[in-house]
Amino acid sequence: MSKQISAGELLLYSLGMGECGAATELAHRELEQLTSSGWDEVIRGAMACNVAPLLYHRLKAFNLDGVMPMDAGRKLRESYLCNAVKNMKLYQDLSRVARAFQSNGLPVMVLKGAHLAKVVYGNIALRKMCDLDLLVKESDLPGAIRILLDMGYSPVDPFTDEDIALLRLPVFIRENATPIEIHWHIKYANTPFFIDIDGLWERARPVVINDVQMLVLSPEDLILHLCLHAAHHILKIGLRPFCDLFEAISHYRNEIDWEQVRLRSRKWKMDRPLSLMFHLLGEFSGKPELKELINVLEVNPVGADLVPGLREHIIMKLNSPSLPTFHLTNFWTSRGLKGKAAFLQKSIFPSRQYMAKRYHLRSDSKRVYFYYLVRLHDAFLRYRPVVWRLCLRDREMTALIKVDSRQIATQKWLMSV
Image 1 (cartoon, helix red, strand yellow):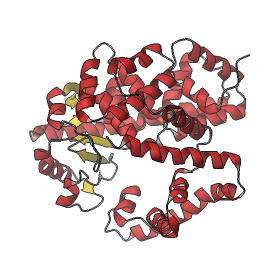
Image 2 (image 1 turned 45 degrees about the vertical axis):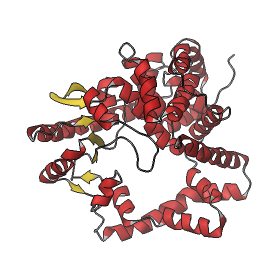
Image 3 (image 1 turned 90 degrees about the horizontal axis):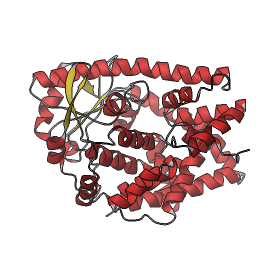
């Protein structure tokens, strides 16, 4: 009998990143022996990581119809079908916006989810999305905003030239339409990376989505962008960034110029995010060729404890997806009473702009004040069990807090050069 593995590890293997033999066989054996409560844990983790549709697709290949409990199969199937319907609407909205941009002579590049689901995964039901990320040239930014306004979209918050200088614009929303985020750069504000944005446009590839030609990042730029995005969100990272990276490498396996990835990573000062993501992907996937890429890319080795530490962080969160510890970790690690008070105020009573974006409202709407009460109520319900368990010195909660605190140091390391 195989060694008992956690629900988080089983979810990792079930997603198919370990499709080279041993990991897949291990997942298949463990899934056949899984109890009903075990299935619930796996599905809960998949839902929390936004990979339930992908898990459903992978499990169909395992032919587990007679093994998986009916309720578990129903939940996964519903997640898959609901995401398919939602994304059909999303791509319809994308087509309309892309046509409007093209008719005004504005090139547009599709980023992240909308690129991945259609082109890389090849099945729009497999990749969950909540909005559309579009890249335009900085000189075209006023025109892009005007087009969205003419189409009935409106920003959830007023913005200024200073916001544009800081690489941030509010989300644009319209009733019964997919929210849209307009970008003119793929880097984040206050990060040390040196990304050649003109080069992204020169290397962009044309694709046809819903009978509309659009641009997407080149395979090499896509890989670097995925690593950059994951590094920026490392404190909340789940499995989806690794699924995205694995699928991108698999889809473009015969086209990727790894020497260009290596050189571009050096030029962009992105060695650390690239190194950590590829070390973890090699660890998760079980595919020897992915581990060998670390040597091919000549990425600097990460700290001895970073890879196992982050792996532990991800697995623990998969095993306990309903335990919100990230904000509590930031609270406990804030220095002094003044620091803790400032963190509480910022977390529970953030700016009107944040609240408007979070609840899809206009910042000048009086409804924002009502949602402060909603946020306070939600925070109480969400964190009460966790705080109580911490007060009782619960081992699992204490371990999660310690693991989370290590990731704060990891993020600081990733965001420095």
